[in-house]
Structure formats: C-alpha cells, structure tokens
Length: 427
Ligand SMILES: [Zn+2]
Image 1 (cartoon, rainbow, N blue to C red):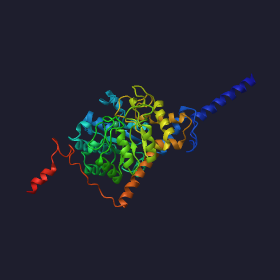
Image 2 (image 1 turned 60 degrees about the vertical axis):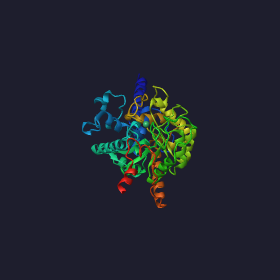
Image 3 (image 1 turned 180 degrees about the horizontal axis):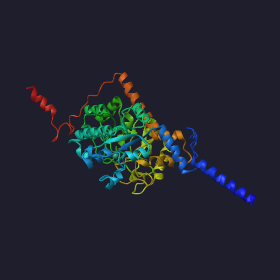
Image 4 (image 1 turned 180 degrees about the vertical axis):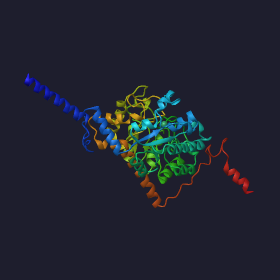
C-alpha cells in the first residue's frame, strides 16, 4: 500500500511536471538554422508567433480596398475596420470578405500590400481616375487607423512600422491598364507611394499581354517596345514589377529586360495546379536566377484547381517551389478579400500562423526558413530594387519619355487627341 502510495505520488509528480513543461514552455525557440522538430501543434504555433514578432509577415496582395468601393462607395465614415466584420453587414453576408484589423492582428500580419485595383472594363475610359481614387482610399484608411497601420514605401519603412507594432501598409496597383498608356502616370503613382505594378490584370494592355487573354505560349512577344520601356522605367523608379496575371510571354520578356528582381504578388505553382494564374517551372527557374519571389496564393481554384482545398494543400505548393528553386524565392500573397473560396484552415487573415505551423510540421523547416518566407525574402527583393534605382540614378539615367501615339488612351472615342489641340492653339 505504501509502495503503491509512493508510486501514486511519483506518477502524479511526473504528470504535473509534464503538464508544467508543456503548458509553461517559454524557453527559447529553436535557433535560426536549427531544424524545428516540434511535436505538438501548440509548440509549433508558439514558435511561429515568436518568429512573426521578430520578422514582419508581409503579404503580397489584399483586395479589401475594392470591397470598400463595392460595398461603401469609398465612404470610410461608414467603415469600422477595427470591428470583427463577421458581425457587421454587408461584410458578414459576403463570401469575399476575410479581412479586418481584429483578425489581421490575430494573424500577426506585419506588412500588407493593399491592392489599388480597378476593373479592366475601365481601360481606355476612367481607369486612371479610379486608380487614383483607390490610392486615396488606401491612404485615408491608413490615416484613420494609424494606431494599427503605418504607411510604408521602402524596406526601411516596413521594418520601422513593424518595430512600432503597426501593420506596414504598402500600395500595389493591379493592372497596367491603370497607367492609361502613360509613363507620366506611372511616375506619379510612384510619387504617391505605389510600390508595385502588376503589369496586367485580366485584359491585355496596348503594351503587355495577360494570361486571361493569351494562354498560348508561342504567341509572339508579351511586351511591346513600349512595354519594355515601362519595365525599364519601373527599374529606374524603384518600383516592384509584379507578374501575377500576366501571360507567359510577358513574364519571359519582363525577366529578360528587368535589371532588378521581379515578383509574383499572388500566384502558386503551375505544376501542382495548371491554372494560367500559376507559375510554370521554367519561369520559376528564371525567377530564381533573377533573384525574385513568388508569393504563394490561397484561392482554392489556384491551389487545387477546384472548389475545395486545405492549408496543407497550400503548403504543398510551397514545398514544391522550395524543392525546385529554393526557399529564398518564396513568400505569401493570400489574395484575401479578392477570393470567395478559401482553404480549410486558412479561412481569413487570422490564419497565417497556421500555415507556418504546417510548414514546421514537416520537420524539414528551420526558423530561418520561416523568416524568409514570412518577410525576409520580400525585404531582400525590395532592397535590391531600391539599390538598382540608386545605381541607375548614379549612372545618370533620366526619365523615359516614350509615348504611345496610337493607344486608345491617347486617341480614340474617349480621349481628347491632345496633339491636335496643340496644333489648333498654335494658329
Ligand atoms: Zn488578382
């Protein structure tokens, strides 16, 4: 009985000790280069949370600004971004809403490229004005919630915002149609703080081909001479070139012309899901040579080519790309608020840590790998883009002045032919 009693005490002590170790695991996370062989989901999430407090998790693409346009006509007075929008109409009723500040904080998002997207239907009409309105909206949103968000336009500013506990908020313009075929508009967008341009959305522009229009690999050039100039001007300005949505021919041309690394702000691996929105292997290899980055996206139709997917399916894309070109060229671009089918376990912006915990579960990922995918890779690419800009400035490269005299943006039913006006007023 006594011995039984002692054994009982011993058993209880062991259990208490085990629970204590499990519950109270506050020790150092695995070192950066050390394989993180963490057995429990809780340990993995704890390690991820520590990692994301050290390095900003930077997502490549979020379409909230377009939803604010759709639902609220850009009236921010009616928008409570700091509420759980699952409880607020019309957001609660929309399958396209996955973002609010409450959940961004839960998801430990440290940096976000907000998409200044306007539809292709506005091309050659009022695309430039609508884009300016979306840029204005994003800036007003950041200002209204400045205790949570901080405008960022450089790698240094991303780190500064993260250091202050605010979500570094960057602007990306999704689609070359937003330029109105004008390098002056491109430069002005840069001055307003836009830090990437997706060369096309779902329409061709007069100078670049879209994957939604030109699926054919062999169908001539993707960029015209003017399109190549757009890329060069982006290099000169220090703006990231985004190839999501572009035709393969455009991808290849941009990779050939650009002096700086390129990104895919929200695309996954074509070899796993053969959507034209995903990146084929040969392009991935060129992207690695270029030093660029593919920010893996979460839309079920690009993850599994169907309506159902899970967080581990997204991880499969990441494993695949890592095996092909290495961990230095991977990021995340969820496309939240631009999608209506999200993977199980990655339903909204609060779930990013689950994805990183899933990567740790493989037992093949160390902490430095996680940091790279979370944000270090994007920071490296942006820093390199800034360096190319500085080098070109030092080399005395001046703004490009080409223009497209025959673009529908320049001459057509909806454009004033400014050249003809000049000739009249000269008389
Ligand atoms: Zn998109």
